[in-house]
Length: 215
Figure 1 (cartoon, helix red, strand yellow):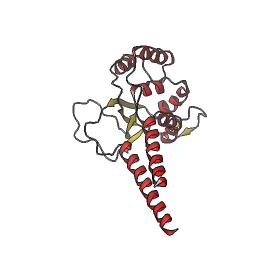
Figure 2 (cartoon, one colour; figure 1 turned 60 degrees about the vertical axis):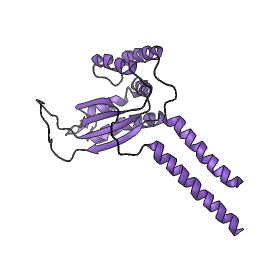
Figure 3 (tube, one colour; figure 1 turned 90 degrees about the horizontal axis):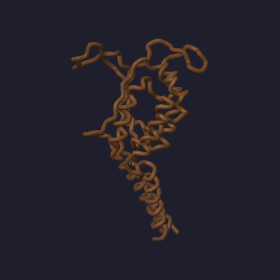
Figure 4 (cartoon, one colour; figure 1 turned 180 degrees about the vertical axis):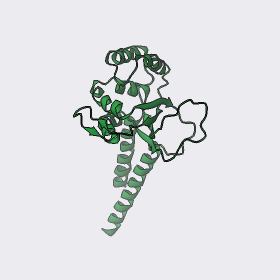
């Protein structure tokens, strides 16, 4: 019985640690935090090609509800080779883009974020109207952020000043906007991580019981 207690106790502790990392426990941004983050973003201009986007970011932060959100990214990678921002070597756009993701993904993961969906285009545009020009989009990505605080901290992180050069070189066109899913068939990590830990605990308990019977 004591062994079973420790097995399930460890599983519950592990899940609590996971939720402590995965969910935002600090609540919405305060006005002081918003002003500090905006000042840092304006000073560094990291991740923005146009300072006119700053009012959009400010409003997004001011409307913070403390909940997770998902950023939709639609990307057109260059069809031709592009210059590597560091070496100047001409390389495929996907390889140059990898220079950005290698820096961005660890920082995103450390803040409880992760890609929720990524897909490449496999056909032409369908059911499309009202647009004068439609770029030849390459792929889309759907990225989960733990909170608006996290995305703001990522944007103004000086570590990414060099990383964004890879993104700008590889992607001549892109658009992005934050979303909140209305219907999402993909299971949240809160579910499958919890179920995985429960399964591991159950299997461990059975193994301990069998070992006890064998002895």
